[in-house]
Image (cartoon, rainbow, N blue to C red; front, side):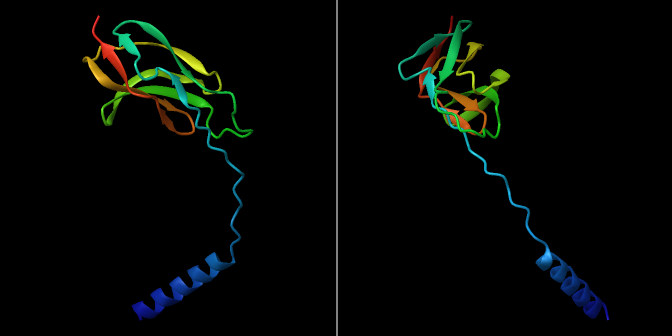
Length: 127
């Protein structure tokens, strides 16, 4: 008896789903502006202020997420260090302060908005 009630329930549920019309999604454009600065060969020193810069010359008409965040990546890992947050991705630049981190030549900036864009590798050195 349980099997037949289960079968009846599943058949009814499938019939209801089959008749439902899918709601079309609005077109979405993913905005992936390349990071221009820092670039390869750049050296930042702890405590300095720099303008992280990206190419905002060709944004799509419908940007899915205009709120930006910049994080620091070292090696193969994005660190929990947030350098800037809650700014318009359409600005094209934002000033950040170089955090106190270990010296290294394998740092990258990660620019989040619609997606995560990595800068080229650059160096951070102590004061």
